[in-house]
Image (cartoon, rainbow over all chains, first blue to last red):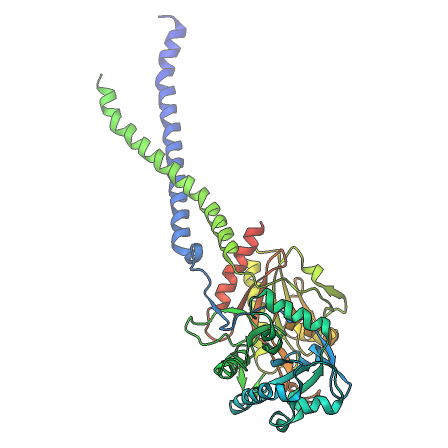
Length: 253
Length: 220
């Protein structure tokens, strides 16, 4: 046996032992890494309750939003400008009066008065904006909504002279949304507008006898829910989305 | 000849451990990716309620502040006034909590905005004093005021959140002011993605935290 082969034969067990040590250490490291990885997964699975959380539950406003009513500023019977700016924050009923003369509109105004009585009975402060065509003098304008409507106080009723281009915009919005059938019904439409100027309902008070009740019921929803389209954080069976604010000692705040 | 027979179970054990280790490592690496994709899915599933309104108002430092300052960031907005003795302090506390949680969660690209619904009274100085008194971190939280007309157009027509005051109330009658109590979530593309009720025991704040995180992760 040569000296070199003798050194090799002495070195082989040492090398083998060293290799086993390395393998042992790396196995231990592998096992540790495995433990750490499994612990990480377990921690994520157990502690992260929200890793696959339930989706947000939305309570939609009961009344659909049909779009934002175009802004307007029209002359009232006193010649003063009145429009969107003065109505911000207040829900209102908008009525276009057809060009049929005072007698032809009386039925419509009577129905509007019924709506107003229904709202007053439920202690809801709504404005009534009546847009009359053609342009009128002060006496003519008042005559159009006089009678039953005139008695309820001037603060809630605003009789305004029509603006052709604005009215065309509104009618085109109603047609685009499929909210009117066209023809004379467009001109008779009664619109429910929310506090933010959003269109929430269209009614034909002259044709449908139940339209008055429907309008009052929807107005109640707008009054309570406000303009917010949907809300998260309420139970699903909640009747409305509470968009206006809370009730305090002095009412809303 | 006996050694392979002895080593076979040992090698099987090693193979099993190796497979388990690889699986665990893959799971540990894939889990964040799974969460990211889940967040993206959640963000995609959030409803859209319209666009962030364009506005130009003034912040608590007296600087001009517009919607352009919010573009590219996920935004949480609320509506308060400094004289409010009732819900506004609570709303501000909830917003501060949300801001702290967002910071702790590493959601750095979030902006917080409070619009004053009593802008005639709430000057930038009063808003700054309000922020100081409550130790608010205004590094990514702006309190805004401006002409009443502009604020109304922004809050009411833009965010569709209620604000107003009783018709017969005087300027000093701050108890007649009413406003929506919701937090509004806006994504980085300037789209309103949610209204959240954060008061009471409702889970609106938790929903908002979840959706906020999802929108931020969807941007990342």
